[in-house]
Length: 123
Image 1 (cartoon, rainbow, N blue to C red):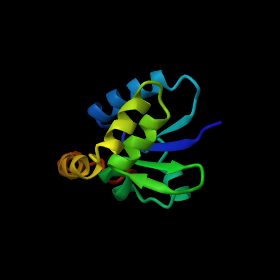
Image 2: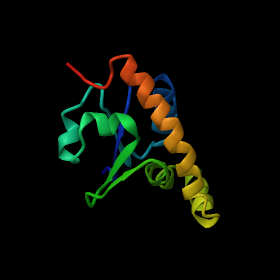
Image 3: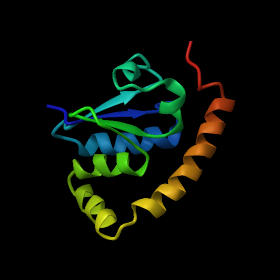
């Protein structure tokens, strides 16, 4: 049974490599991996639109809560073997806000580049 839905941009080479790594580790199938470039209609069920989903990584908890950015990564890491240690470390050291600051800047540049490639609207 999946505990988390992860919405990712499968057209982004960096994103795809990272998600492929996580998928290999998710042997128990705790996470449902949704490539928004292939399954854009799945966004509506989570209350997301394509531009929002393209802008940042999003996950939806089994209770319906939507998380994005560093909080989304932490939610993923908490469900993966060994990676749960990183999630705990980030929380204990209170690194969420500084990491979010960096992620926002990275994500915005990535979003602008993907939009320039025409990926922010799907036919």
